[in-house]
Image 1 (cartoon, rainbow, N blue to C red):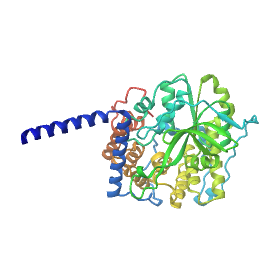
Image 2 (image 1 turned 60 degrees about the vertical axis):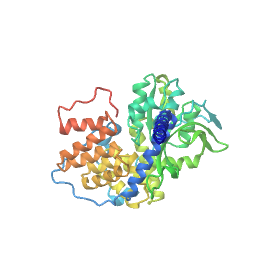
Image 3 (image 1 turned 30 degrees about the horizontal axis):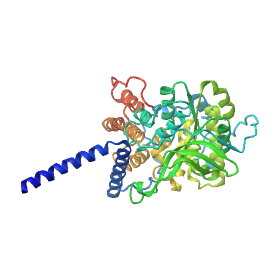
Image 4 (image 1 turned 90 degrees about the vertical axis):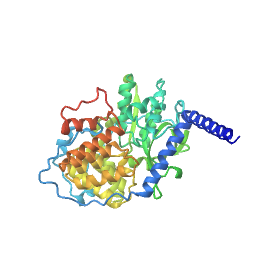
Length: 446
């Protein structure tokens, strides 16, 4: 009798395990459980080995033998002509806040806008694990007849679910290579008027903004809950002074006040992306005006940051945005000084360099290798499993500059595990470690 009870108990347990395994395969349940596992493991990791604030910058003497040989990551290839034109201008740290920077070139007088615009809603897509970028792009492409979902996008630009970041150039890469009947451009220095003009012309707009995570998604006991997030803007209402956004995390048709959107948008330099048909490019150019030209757009962003710093010298996000635009123009020493100021003020969130990598460019090319190693380590240490291919890439370049080719290769191989076919890591190995290293057959992800 006892033996039969044991057999029945084991059989029941196996049935329950099989049932649980079957339920786990349901996509909605699997995504939820996988996400919780990632959050819990990260929380435990950061509870045992907590990550502190970004290290305070300490200017260091560049290595005597150091020669800046910057990699050319696909995300931030600067225009050489613009850099040469600006190279003669230098800024001391204490002069950055009062230097005169070029102002925006005015565009033609815009037509009066309607008080309200509401574009047809796409089929809503709730994001999976770390998938706000792919989910937002999915909804946008559906407005142009695309039939896929976020998994089709993620498997190309972020095949590892734990990868916490998708760059705007990766979203653009997908559009140009997988939805080739469309075009996509992203710029910075956006504002509410530009968003409204694009919407009034029937162009939905993707923006990258700062968001507050729910407490249940905290990465540790001292998490500031600050996070990057993509939204699709599909309408506005001047009477309510609010935009309508398709939010892949919080739901469709979210109402966001104009002033709140500008505050949340600022940490990402007011970045926006427009997707359009090739025959509409002339109209998109007209709407963007001077900002269509990437160099002028970055110069306009410099002016916006400058004005914000003049108004509030302790505006850490403005200093960070200033450094970002200076990197674009390859003014690395000045950019490093701007980032020094941003980090010294100390108001930046802990995840800032998980999503924006301009400081890595600046400190590497300014020869500030010790600090580059510190901030890249701080960036990927906060993520259980080091799921930040960009921080690993630049940590590898830092080690390479100090002669540690073994460490550099290890970093770049880790980056390729986080993001298989990551072009910048492949190019680094091919250029500096293994000249015979075979790049993935094109296209590889940026």
